[in-house]
Length: 330
Image (cartoon, rainbow, N blue to C red; front, side):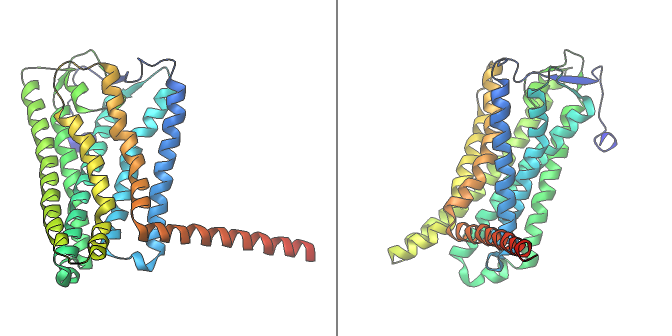
Protein backbone atom coordinates (compact mmCIF):
# COMPACT_ATOMS: atom_id res chain seq x y z
CA UNK A 1 0.00 0.00 0.00
CA UNK A 2 2.84 2.38 0.84
CA UNK A 3 4.57 1.78 -2.49
CA UNK A 4 1.32 2.20 -4.41
CA UNK A 5 0.46 5.52 -2.76
CA UNK A 6 4.01 6.82 -2.51
CA UNK A 7 3.29 8.15 0.98
CA UNK A 8 5.22 10.99 2.57
CA UNK A 9 5.77 9.96 6.20
CA UNK A 10 6.71 13.49 7.31
CA UNK A 11 7.74 13.68 10.97
CA UNK A 12 4.62 11.87 12.17
CA UNK A 13 4.69 8.07 12.41
CA UNK A 14 1.23 7.59 13.91
CA UNK A 15 -1.99 9.45 14.63
CA UNK A 16 -4.20 9.49 17.73
CA UNK A 17 -7.94 9.21 17.03
CA UNK A 18 -9.78 11.23 19.68
CA UNK A 19 -13.27 11.36 18.15
CA UNK A 20 -15.15 9.93 21.15
CA UNK A 21 -13.01 11.53 23.88
CA UNK A 22 -15.74 14.14 24.68
CA UNK A 23 -18.05 11.25 25.73
CA UNK A 24 -16.02 9.26 28.32
CA UNK A 25 -19.08 8.04 30.25
CA UNK A 26 -21.02 7.05 27.11
CA UNK A 27 -18.38 5.01 25.33
CA UNK A 28 -19.61 1.62 26.56
CA UNK A 29 -23.17 2.51 25.55
CA UNK A 30 -21.91 3.70 22.14
CA UNK A 31 -19.95 0.46 21.75
CA UNK A 32 -23.02 -1.72 22.38
CA UNK A 33 -25.28 0.43 20.17
CA UNK A 34 -22.82 0.62 17.25
CA UNK A 35 -21.96 -3.08 17.56
CA UNK A 36 -25.64 -4.03 17.27
CA UNK A 37 -26.13 -1.66 14.32
CA UNK A 38 -23.00 -2.99 12.61
CA UNK A 39 -24.05 -6.63 13.07
CA UNK A 40 -27.52 -5.79 11.75
CA UNK A 41 -25.95 -4.05 8.74
CA UNK A 42 -23.82 -7.13 7.98
CA UNK A 43 -26.68 -9.60 8.49
CA UNK A 44 -29.15 -7.47 6.51
CA UNK A 45 -26.83 -7.14 3.51
CA UNK A 46 -25.81 -10.80 3.65
CA UNK A 47 -29.50 -11.81 3.75
CA UNK A 48 -30.20 -9.61 0.71
CA UNK A 49 -27.26 -11.16 -1.18
CA UNK A 50 -28.24 -14.72 -0.19
CA UNK A 51 -31.85 -14.15 -1.22
CA UNK A 52 -30.90 -12.67 -4.60
CA UNK A 53 -28.48 -15.51 -5.41
CA UNK A 54 -30.94 -18.17 -4.23
CA UNK A 55 -34.06 -16.88 -6.01
CA UNK A 56 -33.96 -17.32 -9.79
CA UNK A 57 -36.79 -14.80 -10.20
CA UNK A 58 -34.43 -12.12 -8.81
CA UNK A 59 -31.66 -12.78 -11.35
CA UNK A 60 -32.32 -9.47 -13.10
CA UNK A 61 -30.13 -6.36 -13.59
CA UNK A 62 -31.89 -4.41 -10.81
CA UNK A 63 -31.09 -7.08 -8.21
CA UNK A 64 -27.57 -7.65 -9.59
CA UNK A 65 -26.88 -3.97 -8.89
CA UNK A 66 -28.47 -4.29 -5.44
CA UNK A 67 -26.18 -7.25 -4.68
CA UNK A 68 -23.14 -5.20 -5.74
CA UNK A 69 -24.42 -2.33 -3.58
CA UNK A 70 -24.65 -4.66 -0.56
CA UNK A 71 -21.06 -5.81 -1.12
CA UNK A 72 -19.80 -2.22 -1.29
CA UNK A 73 -21.72 -1.38 1.89
CA UNK A 74 -20.26 -4.33 3.80
CA UNK A 75 -16.73 -3.39 2.72
CA UNK A 76 -17.26 0.32 3.50
CA UNK A 77 -18.39 -0.36 7.05
CA UNK A 78 -15.64 -2.98 7.50
CA UNK A 79 -13.03 -0.31 6.66
CA UNK A 80 -14.23 1.96 9.50
CA UNK A 81 -16.52 0.40 12.11
CA UNK A 82 -14.40 -2.49 13.59
CA UNK A 83 -11.54 -0.05 14.30
CA UNK A 84 -14.01 2.42 15.83
CA UNK A 85 -15.49 -0.31 18.07
CA UNK A 86 -12.02 -1.36 19.24
CA UNK A 87 -11.11 2.25 20.06
CA UNK A 88 -14.29 2.68 22.12
CA UNK A 89 -13.00 -0.03 24.48
CA UNK A 90 -9.37 1.11 24.43
CA UNK A 91 -7.42 3.90 26.08
CA UNK A 92 -4.66 3.72 23.44
CA UNK A 93 -6.25 4.93 20.19
CA UNK A 94 -3.19 5.31 18.00
CA UNK A 95 -3.19 4.30 14.33
CA UNK A 96 -0.02 3.90 12.25
CA UNK A 97 0.61 6.35 9.41
CA UNK A 98 0.26 3.66 6.72
CA UNK A 99 -2.83 2.15 8.41
CA UNK A 100 -4.43 5.60 8.47
CA UNK A 101 -3.74 6.05 4.74
CA UNK A 102 -5.13 2.57 4.02
CA UNK A 103 -8.29 3.30 5.98
CA UNK A 104 -8.82 6.55 4.05
CA UNK A 105 -8.22 4.80 0.71
CA UNK A 106 -10.67 1.97 1.36
CA UNK A 107 -13.35 4.18 2.94
CA UNK A 108 -13.29 6.56 -0.04
CA UNK A 109 -13.09 3.70 -2.56
CA UNK A 110 -16.13 1.86 -1.21
CA UNK A 111 -18.00 5.08 -0.39
CA UNK A 112 -17.73 6.41 -3.95
CA UNK A 113 -18.39 2.94 -5.40
CA UNK A 114 -21.64 3.05 -3.44
CA UNK A 115 -22.53 6.43 -4.99
CA UNK A 116 -21.70 5.23 -8.51
CA UNK A 117 -23.78 2.08 -8.05
CA UNK A 118 -26.76 4.15 -6.89
CA UNK A 119 -26.38 6.18 -10.08
CA UNK A 120 -26.28 3.00 -12.19
CA UNK A 121 -29.42 1.75 -10.43
CA UNK A 122 -31.15 5.02 -11.31
CA UNK A 123 -30.20 4.49 -14.96
CA UNK A 124 -31.54 0.91 -14.77
CA UNK A 125 -34.93 2.18 -13.54
CA UNK A 126 -34.92 4.87 -16.26
CA UNK A 127 -34.41 2.29 -19.01
CA UNK A 128 -36.98 -0.11 -17.49
CA UNK A 129 -39.75 2.51 -17.32
CA UNK A 130 -38.93 4.89 -20.17
CA UNK A 131 -37.59 2.38 -22.74
CA UNK A 132 -39.06 -1.02 -21.75
CA UNK A 133 -38.83 -2.48 -25.28
CA UNK A 134 -35.07 -1.82 -25.40
CA UNK A 135 -34.41 -2.93 -21.82
CA UNK A 136 -33.02 -6.39 -22.63
CA UNK A 137 -30.64 -4.87 -25.18
CA UNK A 138 -29.46 -1.88 -23.11
CA UNK A 139 -29.22 -3.88 -19.87
CA UNK A 140 -27.70 -7.08 -21.22
CA UNK A 141 -25.62 -9.23 -18.84
CA UNK A 142 -22.44 -7.93 -20.47
CA UNK A 143 -23.65 -4.32 -20.18
CA UNK A 144 -24.57 -4.76 -16.51
CA UNK A 145 -21.21 -6.34 -15.71
CA UNK A 146 -19.48 -3.38 -17.40
CA UNK A 147 -21.51 -0.86 -15.39
CA UNK A 148 -20.64 -2.62 -12.12
CA UNK A 149 -16.98 -2.87 -13.11
CA UNK A 150 -16.83 0.83 -14.03
CA UNK A 151 -18.44 1.72 -10.69
CA UNK A 152 -15.77 -0.20 -8.78
CA UNK A 153 -13.02 1.22 -10.98
CA UNK A 154 -14.32 4.76 -10.49
CA UNK A 155 -14.46 4.26 -6.72
CA UNK A 156 -10.88 2.94 -6.68
CA UNK A 157 -9.64 5.92 -8.71
CA UNK A 158 -11.39 8.38 -6.39
CA UNK A 159 -9.93 6.64 -3.32
CA UNK A 160 -6.44 6.70 -4.82
CA UNK A 161 -6.62 10.37 -5.89
CA UNK A 162 -7.89 11.60 -2.51
CA UNK A 163 -5.49 9.50 -0.44
CA UNK A 164 -2.43 10.37 -2.52
CA UNK A 165 -3.28 14.08 -2.37
CA UNK A 166 -3.72 14.09 1.42
CA UNK A 167 -0.79 11.86 2.34
CA UNK A 168 1.65 13.71 0.13
CA UNK A 169 1.21 16.63 2.52
CA UNK A 170 3.72 17.14 5.31
CA UNK A 171 2.58 16.41 8.87
CA UNK A 172 4.76 18.15 11.44
CA UNK A 173 2.65 17.53 14.54
CA UNK A 174 0.54 17.52 16.64
CA UNK A 175 -0.83 14.13 15.63
CA UNK A 176 -4.28 14.13 17.31
CA UNK A 177 -7.03 13.51 14.72
CA UNK A 178 -10.30 15.10 15.84
CA UNK A 179 -12.38 12.24 14.48
CA UNK A 180 -12.88 8.50 15.05
CA UNK A 181 -11.37 7.52 11.68
CA UNK A 182 -8.90 8.94 9.17
CA UNK A 183 -11.07 11.46 7.35
CA UNK A 184 -9.90 14.35 5.16
CA UNK A 185 -10.91 17.53 7.09
CA UNK A 186 -9.31 16.64 10.46
CA UNK A 187 -6.13 15.41 8.75
CA UNK A 188 -5.84 18.57 6.65
CA UNK A 189 -5.88 20.57 9.90
CA UNK A 190 -2.75 18.68 11.02
CA UNK A 191 -0.79 19.28 7.81
CA UNK A 192 1.79 22.02 7.46
CA UNK A 193 3.23 23.79 4.43
CA UNK A 194 2.23 26.37 1.86
CA UNK A 195 0.25 23.95 -0.33
CA UNK A 196 -2.21 22.71 2.32
CA UNK A 197 -5.07 25.05 1.39
CA UNK A 198 -4.61 24.29 -2.33
CA UNK A 199 -4.69 20.52 -1.78
CA UNK A 200 -7.70 20.80 0.56
CA UNK A 201 -9.58 22.91 -2.00
CA UNK A 202 -8.69 20.51 -4.81
CA UNK A 203 -9.78 17.40 -2.88
CA UNK A 204 -13.00 19.12 -1.79
CA UNK A 205 -13.84 20.14 -5.35
CA UNK A 206 -13.13 16.66 -6.73
CA UNK A 207 -15.38 15.02 -4.10
CA UNK A 208 -18.18 17.57 -4.50
CA UNK A 209 -18.08 17.41 -8.31
CA UNK A 210 -18.23 13.59 -8.25
CA UNK A 211 -21.17 13.57 -5.82
CA UNK A 212 -23.00 16.36 -7.63
CA UNK A 213 -22.41 14.61 -10.96
CA UNK A 214 -23.95 11.38 -9.63
CA UNK A 215 -26.81 13.30 -8.02
CA UNK A 216 -27.52 15.22 -11.26
CA UNK A 217 -27.63 12.00 -13.31
CA UNK A 218 -30.05 10.45 -10.81
CA UNK A 219 -32.24 13.58 -10.87
CA UNK A 220 -32.32 13.52 -14.68
CA UNK A 221 -33.24 9.82 -14.63
CA UNK A 222 -36.10 10.43 -12.21
CA UNK A 223 -37.32 13.51 -14.08
CA UNK A 224 -37.78 11.28 -17.16
CA UNK A 225 -39.26 8.47 -15.03
CA UNK A 226 -41.84 10.77 -13.42
CA UNK A 227 -42.77 12.28 -16.80
CA UNK A 228 -43.31 8.76 -18.20
CA UNK A 229 -45.28 7.56 -15.15
CA UNK A 230 -47.63 10.55 -15.34
CA UNK A 231 -48.53 9.54 -18.91
CA UNK A 232 -49.69 6.09 -17.78
CA UNK A 233 -53.52 6.19 -17.96
CA UNK A 234 -54.40 3.89 -15.04
CA UNK A 235 -53.72 4.72 -11.39
CA UNK A 236 -52.78 1.09 -10.76
CA UNK A 237 -50.20 1.20 -13.55
CA UNK A 238 -48.71 4.41 -12.20
CA UNK A 239 -48.50 2.96 -8.69
CA UNK A 240 -46.87 -0.26 -9.95
CA UNK A 241 -44.30 1.66 -12.00
CA UNK A 242 -43.38 3.96 -9.13
CA UNK A 243 -43.22 1.13 -6.58
CA UNK A 244 -40.27 -0.37 -8.50
CA UNK A 245 -38.33 2.87 -7.80
CA UNK A 246 -39.47 3.61 -4.24
CA UNK A 247 -36.73 1.77 -2.34
CA UNK A 248 -33.94 3.09 -4.55
CA UNK A 249 -35.24 6.66 -4.37
CA UNK A 250 -35.51 6.49 -0.56
CA UNK A 251 -31.91 5.24 -0.21
CA UNK A 252 -30.72 7.95 -2.61
CA UNK A 253 -32.38 10.66 -0.50
CA UNK A 254 -30.84 9.29 2.71
CA UNK A 255 -27.38 8.76 1.16
CA UNK A 256 -27.08 12.11 -0.58
CA UNK A 257 -28.83 13.94 2.25
CA UNK A 258 -26.11 12.96 4.73
CA UNK A 259 -23.35 13.34 2.11
CA UNK A 260 -24.46 16.90 1.33
CA UNK A 261 -24.42 17.80 5.03
CA UNK A 262 -20.83 16.52 5.27
CA UNK A 263 -19.38 18.06 2.10
CA UNK A 264 -21.47 21.22 1.77
CA UNK A 265 -21.58 22.25 5.43
CA UNK A 266 -20.18 25.57 6.61
CA UNK A 267 -16.39 25.57 6.91
CA UNK A 268 -16.52 27.62 10.10
CA UNK A 269 -15.25 26.26 13.43
CA UNK A 270 -16.92 22.96 14.33
CA UNK A 271 -17.01 21.30 17.76
CA UNK A 272 -15.43 17.88 18.16
CA UNK A 273 -18.76 16.55 19.47
CA UNK A 274 -20.60 17.85 16.39
CA UNK A 275 -18.06 16.40 13.94
CA UNK A 276 -18.13 13.03 15.72
CA UNK A 277 -21.93 12.75 15.78
CA UNK A 278 -22.14 13.90 12.16
CA UNK A 279 -19.57 11.26 11.21
CA UNK A 280 -21.69 8.56 12.85
CA UNK A 281 -24.60 9.40 10.51
CA UNK A 282 -22.79 8.41 7.32
CA UNK A 283 -20.53 5.65 8.70
CA UNK A 284 -23.03 3.77 10.90
CA UNK A 285 -26.58 5.10 10.47
CA UNK A 286 -26.84 5.25 6.66
CA UNK A 287 -25.48 1.69 6.12
CA UNK A 288 -27.80 0.51 8.90
CA UNK A 289 -30.87 2.04 7.21
CA UNK A 290 -30.09 0.89 3.67
CA UNK A 291 -30.93 -2.86 3.99
CA UNK A 292 -34.04 -1.97 6.03
CA UNK A 293 -35.31 0.35 3.29
CA UNK A 294 -34.66 -2.14 0.49
CA UNK A 295 -36.23 -4.98 2.50
CA UNK A 296 -39.39 -3.09 3.47
CA UNK A 297 -39.99 -0.95 0.36
CA UNK A 298 -39.36 -3.65 -2.27
CA UNK A 299 -42.29 -6.10 -2.20
CA UNK A 300 -40.65 -8.66 -4.49
CA UNK A 301 -37.49 -8.78 -2.40
CA UNK A 302 -39.45 -8.81 0.86
CA UNK A 303 -41.55 -11.81 -0.18
CA UNK A 304 -38.45 -13.63 -1.48
CA UNK A 305 -36.65 -13.01 1.83
CA UNK A 306 -39.65 -14.41 3.74
CA UNK A 307 -39.58 -17.54 1.57
CA UNK A 308 -35.83 -17.92 2.12
CA UNK A 309 -36.08 -17.55 5.91
CA UNK A 310 -39.12 -19.85 6.15
CA UNK A 311 -37.50 -22.54 3.99
CA UNK A 312 -34.38 -22.50 6.19
CA UNK A 313 -36.50 -22.71 9.36
CA UNK A 314 -38.49 -25.63 7.90
CA UNK A 315 -35.27 -27.42 6.91
CA UNK A 316 -33.88 -26.97 10.41
CA UNK A 317 -37.09 -28.16 12.11
CA UNK A 318 -37.40 -31.18 9.78
CA UNK A 319 -33.72 -31.98 10.42
CA UNK A 320 -34.26 -31.88 14.18
CA UNK A 321 -37.40 -34.03 13.82
CA UNK A 322 -35.49 -36.63 11.76
CA UNK A 323 -32.64 -36.67 14.30
CA UNK A 324 -35.11 -37.05 17.20
CA UNK A 325 -36.85 -39.90 15.38
CA UNK A 326 -33.55 -41.67 14.84
CA UNK A 327 -32.75 -41.34 18.57
CA UNK A 328 -36.15 -42.74 19.61
CA UNK A 329 -35.95 -45.54 17.09
CA UNK A 330 -32.47 -46.48 18.22
